[in-house]
Image 1 (spheres, rainbow, N blue to C red):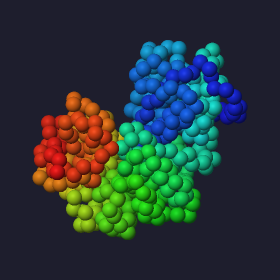
Image 2: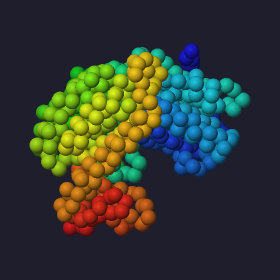
Image 3: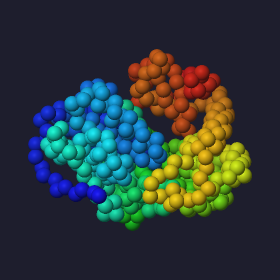
Image 4: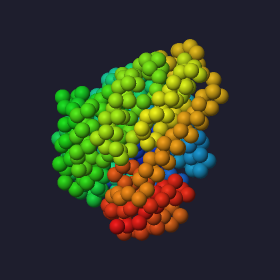
Length: 444
C-alpha cells in the first residue's frame, strides 16, 4: 500500500537547524544530494559532516543490490545511537521501491520517493517524533519531471545530471521501477547549467545519468548533439562521459571523442557478461560481438584510452562452462579495468523467478577470479604509461600528506600535498607506481 499526501507550504520545523547528508550508490545520486544540500544552505540551514551531531539526517539511497539496502539500514542504526533525538529521512531509489518496509522496520521519520526527494525542505514542518513516519511515494509510471542537479564537492570536478530514468527492461534491474522512464532537460537548459558550473571555477564536468546514451527521448534531441554543444561552454576544459550502453556508443561518437580537445579519452561501458547465452537471459540489447567491436574501435582511434567495464558474475543459469566462456572473453579484451558485481536477486525482477540459481559460495569464488583479472588489467594499463606525459587536474583531498588528481585518461596520481595545486591542471611525467597503487609523478 502506498500513501499520497497533499503538500502544504509552511515554515520549516524550527527544531531543525543542522542538517547532514549521506549518499549511497552512483554518481548520479551524489549530484542530486549535492543539489539538495545547496538548497538547504540557501534556506539558511547549517550543513554539517555526517559524523557530526545534527538535527536532521538525510540518506539518499541506492537499491541496485541487497548490500545497498543493508548499508542504509546500518546507517540508520548508527544515527539512532549517535543522535537519538534527531529526525531521519530516507530518500531515493530504496525509498521509492520499498517505502513501507523502511517506515515500519527502520523507525525513520520521513520517506521520500523519486517524485518528492527534491521537495524535502517543504516537509520539515510536518516532522514530529510522536507521530508515525510520513511516506510520500507515487506511481513511478506517472513521474515525468526532471530535476536538474550537479555536484560541487571539491570545486574541481562536477557531476552534471543530463538524463534520468530508463526505458530498458534488463531482467535483473530495478532502476526503471525506482526512477521511471527516460527523460531529460533540453540541451539549451543543460548548457546554461554547465555555464553556472564553469562560473564557480570548476574545470571538469562528468556527464551523468541512468542511461545517458538515451538522452533526447523527451526533447527530440540526441546525446551526440548534447556533447558537441557542451564543448562550446567557456571555462569547462574537460568533459568525461560516464557509463554509456555499448549499443548507444556509436562509431560517430567514438570518432568525435578521438578528435575532441575537451572530451577525455575515458570510457565506462557496461558489458555484464561475456557470454551471449547469459546476455540474452539478462535481456541486454547487444551481443558480445558488438561489444568487442566498440572496444576495438576505441583502441584503434585512441590507443591510450582508459576503458572501464561492468561485469556481473553468478547470474541464474551461469554454469561453469558459461563462466569460463565469459572469463576467456574478458581476458583477451584490451580494456583497463573491470568493475565486478556479484549477482544480487531483487524483488519484482524477471531474474528473481529464473531457475538454476548459482550458489553464493560459487559466486564468491568467481567474483574473486574476475577481481584478480581486473587488478592485473589495471596494473598493466598503468605500467604502459610509465615515462609518458599527461595533464592532471588536482583535487582537494589531503591524505597522509599527499594530494591526488587524474590524468585525461583516468590514471590516478599522487604527490606531496600543495594547496595551491587544487583545481589546477598541470603537465606531469608519470614515473612509477606508488605502494598505494597510484602513479607517482614529476612536474614538467
